[in-house]
Amino acid sequence: MVNTLVRPSTTDALHFIEEHHVSTPEKTFLIVLGDCLVNYNGRARSLLDWGERVIMIKQDGAVLVHQPVMREPVNWQPTGSRTEFTMKDNHLVLKSRHLHPPEKMKITFREVQLITVTSLRDRANLVIAGMETDVVNQIISDPSIIEEGLRITKREKPVKSGSIDLYGFDKNHVPVIIEVKRSLATISSVHQLRMYVKETKKDNKEAQVRGVLCAPRVPEMVKKLLEEHDLEWREVERNVVLPDDRQKTLREF
Amino acid sequence: MVNTLVRPSTTDALHFIEEHHVSTPEKTFLIVLGDCLVNYNGRARSLLDWGERVIMIKQDGAVLVHQPVMREPVNWQPTGSRTEFTMKDNHLVLKSRHLHPPEKMKITFREVQLITVTSLRDRANLVIAGMETDVVNQIISDPSIIEEGLRITKREKPVKSGSIDLYGFDKNHVPVIIEVKRSLATISSVHQLRMYVKETKKDNKEAQVRGVLCAPRVPEMVKKLLEEHDLEWREVERNVVLPDDRQKTLREF
DNA sequence: CCTTGAATATCGGTG
DNA sequence: CACCGATGTTCAAGG
Image 1: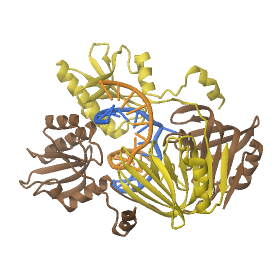
Image 2 (image 1 turned 180 degrees about the vertical axis):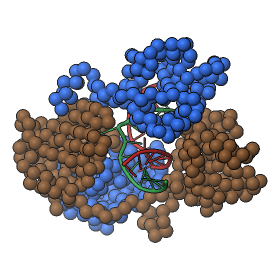
Image 3 (image 1 turned 90 degrees about the vertical axis):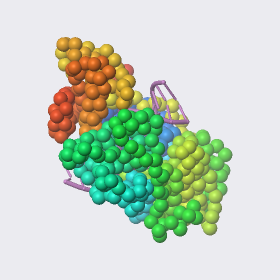
Image 4 (image 1 turned 45 degrees about the vertical axis):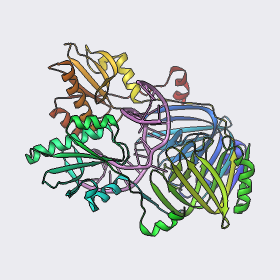
């Protein structure tokens, strides 16, 4: 079920939207392509001058304004926004409001090139692999990835200043704190790890506590900082494997 | 200039795309609405089962797959990807590749409800206000926002473990480090500030160096942590003002 | 409800 | 090219 109008007048565009979208916005997905101007006021404030863009209003109230380039929408409204349409000075005007946090956006169209209304049926969920939790799981199932004789005893161990990804003991029974980063290790991850080690030493009155930063790549500058603070690092490969029943489809790809 | 095809066969869809998009992809913006399956392999790996979605191919090669809800695309390819179309088992197949980092995505359509090809003309740039740099500028132009007698001497002062937002001296000539956060102050910002103060003390052999965390809101927990480390904070309003010539348009909104 | 941290983060600025 | 930090980050998970 798709309804489309090519190059309507702004008045016809409004009528079309009122007929097909306004009464049941939570069930219809609206796409408008046209020459427009965008105002936004909320957490920040912005103005986007006239230009041709694609606007989508999703079935949960999210509004996206897409320019011809870039992955990110240039303007948007969050999920749960309420959107209304009116005419002003022969322009089609879209006003969208969000309550918490308070945000409003106004789109003024001086020309509409295309309007499409549809109702998307999509019950599928994304199955994804290759995230930090996967690395953590991998280390739990085989701690020798980090080093021989390592024993993991806790995951997500809460401390005063945050939460330790993995906690355990090495072959000499020395406590080991492991901070896992999915991608690049940063200076803040070092700060974090340092904090955890310090707090653990204090809390347990341990003289020695090791801290290991575990990431696919550790930049030189970060390595230096780690060394300065007597911390360690391991560069580990990400494991990018989906659940078994999904593997077939992906192998073919 | 908009070309649209409603409910084409997958074969007709391919012909349409070849005619209007393939030869000049950097000039045409493609929207496909249909029942599809999405595979992705790159930094992570994912599979999205059959469902109705909106796919956009932007003029810079970015590809977005949008489900009926949520602000974020469920799958995407970055700017600069190359996309090809083929037929396989009576399905329209889109394959997109990106080189650095290596990423590929495959979308298989078993039904196409709408195809639109257009060429968006948009030379406008977003004018935006309310970001961290604005707060930093504001403090520079009027340091009394933080406190009377404060004198700012450096902006983005580089130190070993990062970069200090603002550096200066209070009315008693004591060095002051100011860390600015646009939104919520977090525990990591405290770690960061602590680090900066410590390093500055060491580098300058100063007995006293003040550290001030400056954010629109500082949660209780963060305040506690700051107090523990003899650091300070200021809660400041964000300044959400656009350049003068833009104000008129926004005031009306 | 608030808080925390990950993300195929994306994006721009800087060296 | 690598690195770094902001983002109207968005989003899900956990207390």
